[in-house]
Structures are given as structure tokens and as C-alpha cells.
Amino acid sequence: MPFVIEALSPAIIGRPLGQNLYNQAGNLLLRKGTLINQRYFEFFKDKGYDSILLMPQGGDQTTAGVGSDRLLTAAPYLLKKMFKKLRLEESVYTAQAKAEIISLAESIFIHFKNIRRKAPQIIELKRRDDYLYQHSVSVCLYSLYIGEKLGYSDNKLMDLAIAALIHDFGMEFVDGQVLKKDTELNEKELAHIREHTKNGFSHLVKNCSFDGLTIVASAQHHERFDGDGYPKKLVGNDIDEFSRIVTLTDAFDAWTSDRPHRRLQSAQTAMTFIQKNQNKIFDPTIAQTFMEILLPEKLHF
Image (cartoon, helix red, strand yellow):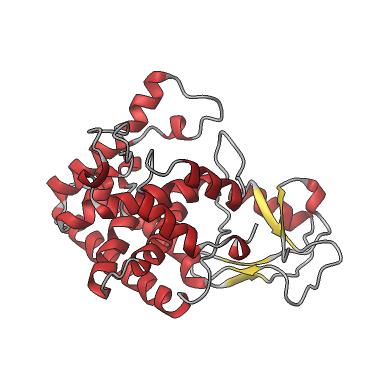
């Protein structure tokens, strides 16, 4: 294994970092192989990391680890600003945010075209306060892998990239205290969170001018293939294909990320969940496509 994942604790002090870390502008902060001292530990803690990538004990420090890509590191910070702007009702701001999101989607798509022959990056450790935006970028990239495997044209892949980037925009309207809760949610809280699909889609329709194809996933990414999802309990192919792709990539990235109520799970665990839920939660064709992309020998942890 080229790196190990450890919970953030003082036990990591003195261990070599297993990834490059960049700031929000994409500039290198810490190079992989750097020995973590008390100051770096406090930095990780302050930035909201719950886990960190380390080189294995006695491992080859010249090749171990995963280098975070500069674009994908900076993208969540950019998306966060865009979502805040997009939430406003003034057309001048929403139009500007829309143009910026399309530009960001295009940059991610170009990046994807340059790396698509490699297995998708599985590990992208999340910061608590920026989870939504990091998650959205990861879902965008995973979705592009599936879209290309399904034979999408470049234009259709661009639409998919935009749809995936803004699929969870409605979470901007969810109470932050509910999102940060580290215990089981009650029914009222669950109902509040489930409103994010309606609220996000409604805002994008009323106040923004995205193409309908690019916002449908914001409404449908919690529909299930068996009809037991929300908000409309759509069944099978009644759910838009973009939404069926995002449903899967959204779930996969959530499983492999630290969340307030649970630590990240392994990629194998997430893939087992997807495999068991074909025809239930997930479109079986899309699930099989994703499993072909992430063959067991390609999974990073």
C-alpha cells in the first residue's frame, strides 16, 4: 500500500506526510514526505481534517503517497464562492456565478481528459467546513469517468460535469447545525435535510438560467432505482440518466469521506455497498460501469 490513512491525533507527529498539500490558490504548502511536527498537526486540526494521509512505516518516501492535484485542490474554494453568489437572488450575481461554474466545469473536464487513462483518484480527504464543495468536485470527476465509459460526446460530458458540480447546491439552504451534528438525526432533522433537493432545484429554476439538463440532478440525486427514494419516488428510467450517475457517485464519495457522524469507509466497502444495491438504489448498468472503472486492483485503499 503506497500510503496509510490515520485519524488525526498526536500519534501522527513525527510521521512523514503521504500527500502534497496546497492552499486555496493551488500553491504548495507542504510536500509529501515532510515530517509532521506539532505546528503542522495544529494546522491540520485548525483546518478541519479528521484524517490524514501518511507514508507507511519504513516505506519508500520518494514514491509513496498521493499528490493532490492543484486544480482539484483549488476548485472547492472557488466553488464555495460561486455557491454563495449563486444563492443570491440578484440576477447580476447569479449570472456571474453561472458563468464561473461553467468555466470551472470546463477546467475540470480538461483536467479529466488529461488524466482519464489513469484510475480515478479515490482519496481526497475532506475538511469539515468545506465538505460540500470538495464533495461536489469529486462527484463531478467520478461522473465524468462514467459518462465517458457510456460513450458520451464532449458536449454531453460538459453538461454532466455542470450537473454534478451543482447537484448538491440545495445543501446551502440546510441548517449548518444539523449538518454538523455527530449523532443520529431525528425525523424532523432528516425531513429538513431532504428538502435540499426541492430547495436547490427551485432556486436554480427561479433565479438562475441553467439548462434544464444540468439542474435535473439537483432534484433527483436521491431518487432510487426501485422507486423508494425522494422527493418524487421515481422508478428506473423515469429518473434522468445524469441523475442516476450522480446518485451513484454521490454515494461513493460520501462513503469514502469523513463525516460528522462517521469516519470514512474503504473504497472496497463502498463498492460492496454499490454492488449489493444494484436494482435497488442504483441503476445496474451504471453500477456495473463504475465497477469496471474501479477494478479491485485499482482501488487505492
